[in-house]
Image (cartoon, rainbow, N blue to C red; front, side, top):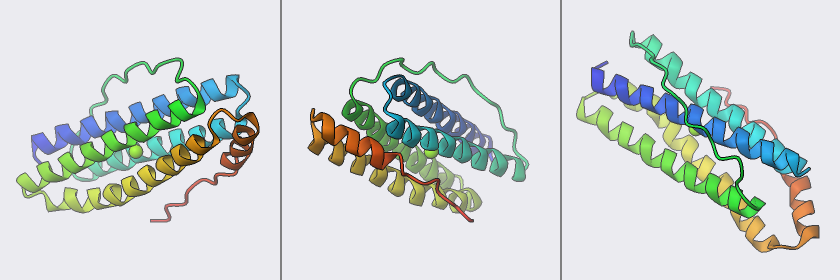
Length: 167
Ligand code: MG
């Protein structure tokens, strides 16, 4: 693979790891507030981001490229109310989607069909990521400041199961 595509894949690895770090920070805030369900949701999300990074890590190596890890920015300590945190998560996923699409276009510019094929999985995954975060924002918007509704949603989000990407 060419140096531009390799560099962009390394940037994407950083972005996935950085996403995981942000979700872990959100989990830390929710756990401190005893929102165990929201924390569980964020922990699963953080783990998924690590899996995304490792998927690209393995791909670069399989192509004979070189993975070069980069610094991960320090995430914020506070994200505000659950609605604010999940809105932040949705915006974050939209930025990741845009980054994947740019990477896809770059691979096309370099006729790197194999990388585009690899990225197909990520394109589909991002649709799901935005759907999940968007649904959370919708439900939290409806709950507003109502404590009983927030506790109900915390319970519900606590039931989120880990995804099985059997592929
Ligand atoms: Mg990701």
